[in-house]
Structures are given as C-alpha cells and as structure tokens.
Amino acid sequence: MIRFLARFFKREQQYSAVGKDLLKLAIPIIGSYLLHTAYNLTDMIWVGSLGSNAVAAVGSAGFFLHLGWAMASIVTVGANIKISHSVGAKDEEGAGRFATSALWGIGLIATVFSAIFWGFPEKFINFFQMQDPEVNEMATSYLVISTFGVILSYANLLFISMFNAHSETKVSFKSSLIGTAANIVLDPILIFGLSLGVDGAAYATIIGRLLSLLYFLYIYKKTANINFRGILPCLDKFKTIFAVGTPAAVQRISFSIIYIFLARIIADWGPNAIAVQKIGVQIESITFMIVGGFMQAVTIMVGQNYGAKNLTEVPNIYRAGWRMSFIVGSVTTVLFLLIPKTLFSIFVPEEESILMGKEYLMILAVSQLFMCLEMINAGVFNGLGKTKISAVVSVIFTSLRLPGAYFLGFYTFLSLNGVWWSITGSSILKGIVMYMLLRAYMKKDTFGKI
Image (cartoon, rainbow, N blue to C red; front, side, top):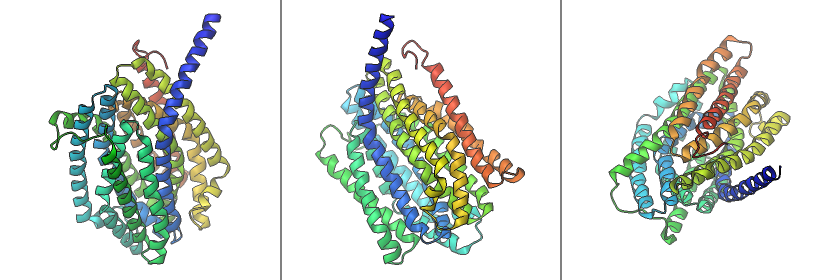
C-alpha cells in the first residue's frame, strides 16, 4: 500500500511538472489562436451588419482561402515537427537547414495558389451555384483581394512554425496581437467609413498580416538561436519536410474540400443556411482554438523529447494535455447547450438565422469532448512524426460527412439539422478511433501506458 501511494504521488508530481511546462508553452499559442478567432469574429460582426448576403459571400470565398492555408501546411507542419526534433537533439545546424528548405517550399506553394485564384476566381465562386448575383459578385471580389495577402499569410505561418518549434511561443502571440489589433481598428473604418463593404474586410486582413510579418522580421534579426542556414534548400531536408507534412496537409486539404462540397449541400437551404454554418464554425472554433493550443504544445513537447530520445516522458505529456482539454471541452459543451441563441444573436440580426444557429450549436455540443480527444491524440502522433495515422483517420471519417449530410438532409425529417448531425457524428467516431489507436501504439515498452 505504501509503495502504491509513493508511486501515485511521484506520478502526480511528474504530471504536475509536465503540466506546468505544457501550460507555459500552450498559453501563448492559445492566445494566438484566440486572437485569430477574434480576428475572424470581428470580420463576422462587421460583415454581419451588412446582412446575411455579405456573410454568405465572405463565407463562400473563405472556403477556398482555407484550402490554400491547408496547402501551406505541407511545409509548415513538416517544418514545425522536424525543427522541434532538431531542437531536442540540440542540432542548430539541422534546424536552420530545415527552416531554409521550408522557406523555399512555402514560396513555391504561395506562387501556385495565387496564380490559380487570380486567374479563375469566378469559376470557383460559381461552384456554389448561388442564385443571388450580388452575393456572387461580392464573393468574387473578396476572393481576388484576399489572394494578394496569401504570401503574407504563408510567411507568417512559416515563422510561427519556426519560433514555436524553438518554444518561443510568446513571439507568435505578440505577432498575432499586432495583426488582430490592426484588423479590429481597420474593419469599421474600411467597411463603413470608406464604404468598401466586404472588400474593406479583405483589405483590413491584408494590412493586419503585413504588420504581423514585419514584427516577426524585427524579432528574427535580434534572435541568435533561430536562423535560416544556407541560401538554397537542402534536398534531403526538403524531401523530409514534405514527407512529414504531406499527410497533415492532405488531412487539412481534404477537410477544406469536404467543407466546400458540404457548403454546396447547405446552399440548397439558401444564403441564411450558409451564413449559419460560417458563423457556427467561428463560434465552435473557440473550443478548437483553445484545444488546438494544447495540441500544438503537445506536438512540440513530444517532438523535442523524441529528438532527445526521451520517450518515457510522452505518456505524461499526453495525460497533461488531455486533462486540460477535457476542462475546455466540458465548458463549451455546457455553453452551447444552455445559451446557443444568445451566442448566435451576437453575429446576425435575422431571427431565422438565429434559430438555425441555435439548433446548430446544440447539435455540435454533443461532439465537443470527442473533438478534444481526437486533437490531443493527434498531437502525440504528430510529435512522433507519425502524421499519417491522424491524417488517415481524419480523412476517412470526415469524408463520411458528405453522404451522411446528403442522406440525413434530403431523405429524413431532420432536413438541415441532418447536416449538422452528420458533422457531430463523424467527430464522435474520430475521437474514439484516435484514442484506441494511440492506446494500442503506446503499449510498447518504450512508452509505457497512457
């Protein structure tokens, strides 16, 4: 009994120490993510004041912008993981070579993405077959303007990956703070003061991201241990970044594509339904962003311990991340169940949209804890460089949302709510499967039990 209690308290002390380190690393990341959410919510509040048509326009264009950011994760995810491995192994030269290779990769993807969306913006917006010409025109204009900021967005994402991999998460937070503050100030000025409408929101976003990048460049010049090494990319490291980052990118790209097709299904219920889905995702992202901070911190800590060949610490990192995420998921579940109408009424004035949004949040509340479970498990796998596992699970079960939404939406009494149930059902399945896979993987003697 005494030995059991001694082991118990020793283990709790280990969890506490790891938890403090994880929290210290995660808080700036969470702050950055929440600022990103505030960034988007600010746009939605001001654009929502223009009406549901404006929200639908920004939302439809936003699907393709998110697709572009998902493409960038081929480089940013791979760079983050491999640089963290190098940091754990105390290999500064390797970390710098990975950073230079990532810079070339991100430039290549930005060039391809920008050329495509500058050349054929109408064709992408017409995919949704929205009947309102005004919505199509606003969406096309917003997409074209936003594409000019792609290189700024990608460069910021690369610097975030580099600094976070070195545990310098506070720098990323400060950069996000600068960009968000600028966006909050500029949105009403450009949207209403200069009467630019949704175009003003796009311009405000570009300016905010430019200021964020300038701050990164300023700090980079003053930082001694974070550097690009060499001018040309190292072919082996270039290949490694793409090998590690591609599964995560496929996961994000497929997620974006699935949501584009899902939006096409939702469009059959009109612009209000598209606006509800867009705003609902932003509200739900409160959970996603906070837990995403813990997930990123778990990935970094696991990655650094993997590089240092200290695998016995991985279960402690997992437990600390899950405990914190469980608290967040529980709180947002309660909020979505108790005050969904209040949350939605912040963003749109139309009663029909508010009632649709209420049902959306109450249905999505069922899956919040499972989404948290999926993300923390994915963070561990990613930190180990096993990005294929979480990517395969995500792609398979997220893909099920399309046939599920189509069947439940058009062939059952659930109607539009059937689409929301297809989303929440797939999240539940992903959480359960990811937990079972990690549990099986961690039974190896080198890790211990979770």
